[in-house]
Length: 163
Figure 1: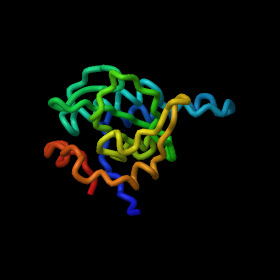
Figure 2: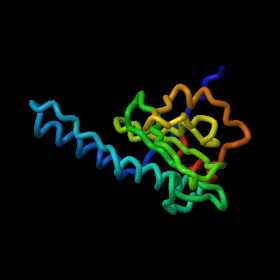
Figure 3: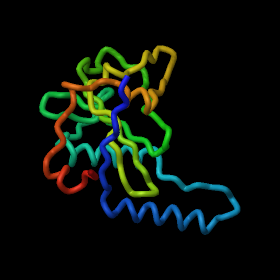
Figure 4: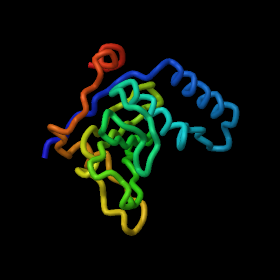
């Protein structure tokens, strides 16, 4: 199986301010061992903002989706953990069957992002009957998404993509 290379892109300058602030907080409290890493809602919101700029997604929260691209339901997942994957929760009968999945990794140290997955959610969604499940970065990069990818907007590609 071929391992795809993630598509890298630079992040807005404001992300650099967050990186500097977290570093300054670690320096303020050096003996506590705290990392002050951006996570949770902040990371998810950043991923959604990137998807709006990268693909033109219109944000509209729903059951298991974050927005739409035309009629296509979109789920956006973002992590800042270097070896982290995408966490999935059980879905119900209202979850759209042909949901498109976008997964980003945020490299805080270098203020860069990586597009890890851009394809149909069904290609990687695990069985979550027993609760939340995570799909590894490796699995997403090994999954063939050809023919299901969304096209990156040209202005985003020209402005942010790293060759």
